[in-house]
Length: 482
Image (cartoon, rainbow, N blue to C red; front, side, top):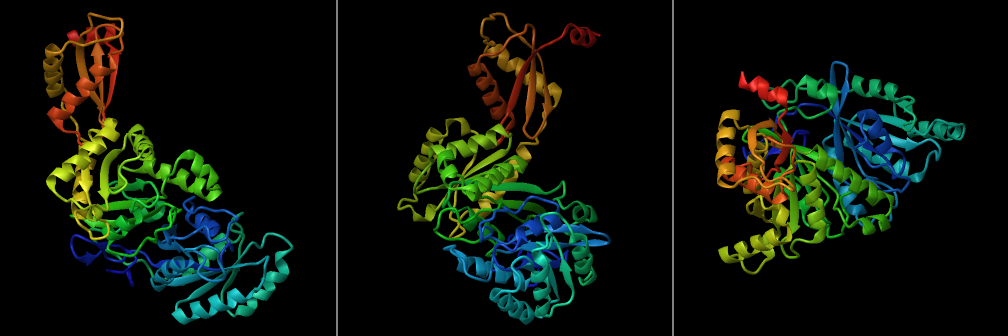
């Protein structure tokens, strides 16, 4: 297993080398509930990290670039690595935090000004000094009189510099950024695969990146799949349902193409989510937002359990959002029968359970062993290409004329409907408009006929197709006749 070590850029699983280091790394550490995630969101200008009053909400280490003048840095939010915790996954959270800490160029030690100096802070102070990395002490929650005495106590930890901040209100965060920047090495200039200045300034992926959201029910193997693709223990993996809470994204290279992969929380039925409390509700909301932001959505299905109604609901969200869709039947290695007949039977069952997803490719994988995970990436890339496919107007109209003559249009309440002209008006997803001689809505079965024939002729694998019907206006007819 390849670890990040000194590299904050990801390992390229398909070229066997590490991407050149781009940005220096800053890691936030501190006890649970001192405000690390609020500070992370404030410094990055995002709402990436879930913030609740519940200690131990953050589990996976989250990363996001922070733009500053003349450069930038990669900020990492860690879970509560120190102090007592009721979280059953606390040991795994600690491991993930220490891995993140090993990559740091600088540590921001976050403490709570209202609580003052507590024993857990001494433990953390000893740990961060042991790394040999520069440390900035950030005293958070210094926005009321209650914090004055506590803040004075925290100066006794002996760190320099010390910055008093209020992450919730933004006070002092600019001073913290100045202190951090002054102690960081300059970003390393790179070639080819490096992030551009524009990326750093705006904190987003470049237009050429392919955004992939990994979605599914709890315990389907989403985090294991992300770790396998990155060849790094990036995500915490455990048999406890709901391990992942924040959507965590990472970048890896595939044939010199950047793929930004987002691991999301498992999505349960709405009633169970409501009973799961505020943390789970926020996790699901952010998972759905990741679907909306993706180019391609990979639905991870437990091959032992099979497709459920909740899988159908999840993938329905992706279809409605117009995202490309790939179905990954995970844990294939645990099935007793690996024959071609068994694989076909499994595919047929998926199609039966998801009849509206007949266009989505199915890949049998094992995140545990890595079997066919390279094939999954290949299919994802192909789907991303297909959803941006454009058909020339001339070729499209010749084809539409042929298929409508072979099977005349059927419309509700209208008999003499003719498709006069067709045009592709958009991509991602492919969108077509059929102009007819009269105002009418084509029967849904005829829309399906047209969509299926378009797929047979042009592909569009793994992507929804939007097909609209419009009556051609008189002005348009007159213009075209000339």
